[in-house]
Amino acid sequence: MANIHRGEIQATIGGKSMTLCLTLGALAELEHALEANDLVDVAEKFSAGRVSARHLLVILGAGLRGAGNEISDEMLSNMSIENGLKGAAQIVAQLLEATFGSVET
Image 1 (cartoon, rainbow, N blue to C red):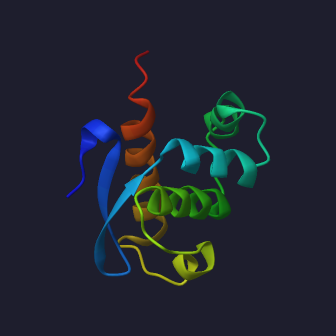
Image 2: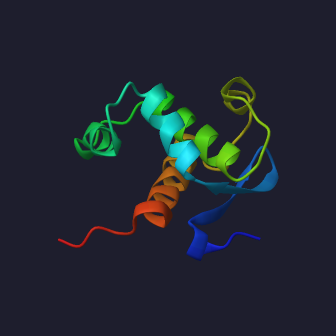
C-alpha cells in the first residue's frame, strides 16, 4: 500500500498494482538519464510542457525502482499501462506531485 506522506503512489502497470516513489536515489537516476545538471534543470525540461515517451519511461522506471521494484526500463517498455500514453502521463503527474507537491499559481 502506497504511503502518500513518503511520496509514494499506487498505479496499475502490466496488470499489477505497483508502488512508485521518487527517492533521492531515483531523482539522481533521473538527473543522469536526462543529462540534467540538477533538479531545477530536470524541472525546466518539463516546464515547457514537452514530454517525450522516453521521459515518461525514465520517470516511471525510476519511480518503480525507487519503491523497490526490480524492473528495467526495457522490461517496463513492454508492459501495458491502462489508458496507454494518457495513463502513463497521469501516473507521472501523480508521482511528480507526490514528490514535489502541487504548484500554486
